[in-house]
Image: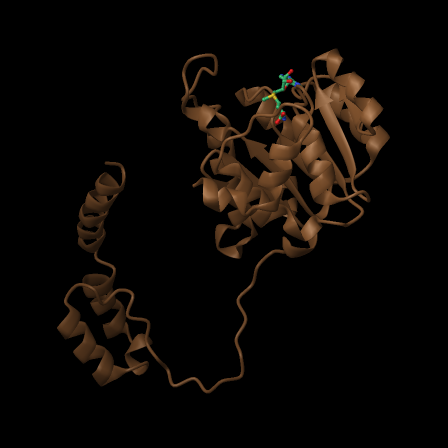
Length: 285
Ligand SMILES: C[S@@+](CC[C@H](N)C(=O)[O-])C[C@H]1O[C@@H](n2cnc3c(N)ncnc32)[C@H](O)[C@@H]1O
């Protein structure tokens, strides 16, 4: 593992930082993957959780001198790091008023990384109150999400864990499909992509990419290929029918009856579910 880590620029900067910092070892490969394209750009990067300031030095070196590095911490001692050129805000990540003031002063930002208190309300507040203020093409990154499964200090697993909140967002981004017939709220309009790594969740923000979806055809020749989705059971009989009647039988009354019996029979769902149960059991071993 160490050899692989040593090849990563961000890991070397972490090791060389003049102040103490502590991160999980899998984070560095994720940082390289998600942050590389922002290097040497004029960006605003925010980290919640400053502690000794070690990671702030790492970020400044990684993103370059055009990046504004901002730290947020509840501990007022963090303010002393401003002498190194960082901008530090003192306040709580779970306080709505703090975020209102923060974004009034800073305006829109590119990247926000949460390495703060890691409690459900703290992590969820970061995403919830920051979402309207992230630029298109930006990201919200939440670290230590494994704490969604930890009882001691974090009161998890819980219905209101950060991971459950993030799973909800998976449902919300699917509202962009017209098949769901749902309204697009702010989350559906802004979160383009959610990535789950071990202990890190990344939300990619891009309003322009979050459009209400629609199906589109090309101009290729349609040979009337039939979707065999429902041909799993009574395979041979159905195949014969489809070959014989092709698309024609789709419109007849006869086809409707046959389809009910042979294609959409609820028994097939029962059989599917039986197989699915086995797979679900297997992956949770
Ligand atoms: C894990 S440390 C941060 C480490 C730092 N990012 C590093 O890598 O060196 C967590 C920090 O979050 C701060 N913190 C805890 N709860 C907070 C809250 N509600 N709002 C803001 N900061 C908080 C703590 O004071 C602590 O300094």
